[in-house]
Image (cartoon, rainbow, N blue to C red; front, side, top):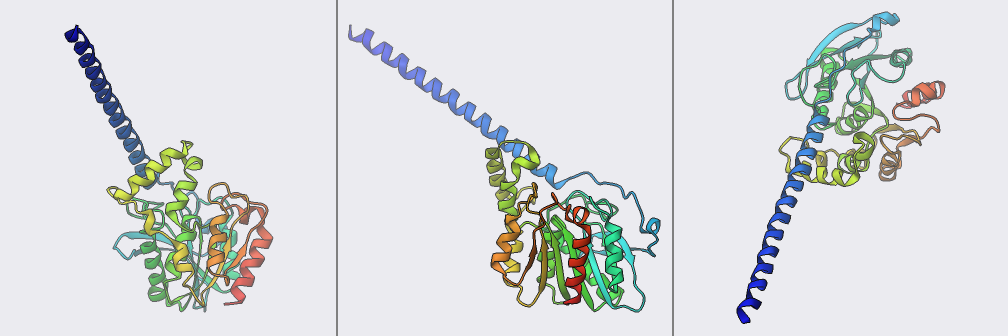
Length: 308
């Protein structure tokens, strides 16, 4: 009788062991699947397809010189130099993620003419891994700072400009804040739709960009901390440099209904630096404020330039 009682107990114990083994195996498979998916998402984010340049400033009657220069880490970058005679003032345009110096969702050469009317020569260039520039990775404002540093040095030394300002959109806006706040030669910065901190922004906007559940974004956030892909969002924090940028003229444009980068990102930076001029137009999605509020945008840019 005792032998019959012991046998079922052993069988039950074996079943529990098998169930635990199968469960742990399935858990490992699921973890690897999420890890693989997260790694793929990060890799795709760092390798957006290059978009060809579709127009040239000459098509809009703008005198242009094709230029190339080096980023701070030695990559060859290409751009357009649109000079104003007898002027030592220049503005550097920095484009958004996945786009290039021309392909922006607004009439960018109209804005070039606004700056030129105020005596500013204009440099438009492609970030690494964009347009005609070299490089095969996009790091979303980390190494792009090195590109913008190269652009600033180019207009300063090669074009003899001594009054330099920056304007950028989205990733280019955040890059302009990061590089410009640290660069003594930059007199002012216009940032259109920047993020304040890349690590928190990536998590907050994960569903918008990927159409995947937010919890996968949390897994991806963990994977980025391993740094095996070279993606380091925790190092990209414009809000940290903005709060220390005493005396630097900064204007931020951020539409209230921006679906890609919440306007709260810019509001956070305004709270850290009360001297920031923050304009939040009612109309405009992501980097569409100029297209939808053209006259007011131009008026505000001109007013900003006159204060420098």
